[in-house]
Length: 126
Image 1: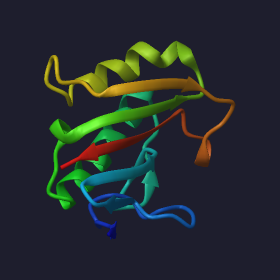
Image 2: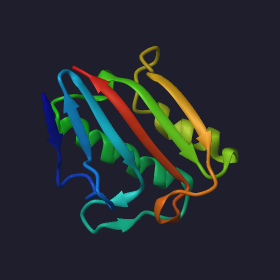
Image 3: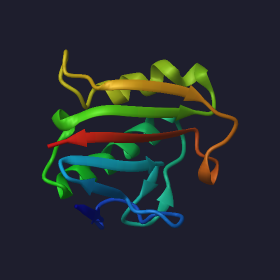
């Protein structure tokens, strides 16, 4: 069974997709960028600020689904500059308990939606 997950505590999609989809016991969270959901404005200034906003957006989607970062089993991080790897890691890693980090891929890309420097998607299970 497929259920669309949406919350006003995360930004509205910027295209024809859902914030997340729950299929049976698996939650697929669409790629999140650093949009402030209250003002629908991009967070700018540093890759750390972008990363923090993204993780807060994902946290809101997980919470809407009755889940937390403990349920995350897979994530993908897309960076426009791999030199930001350690800065993003620092913020990203702070949301997971030591030893409970999910499987992950980090990919450098030539561009991301809205000109952001980082995008993150995740898969979580109940």
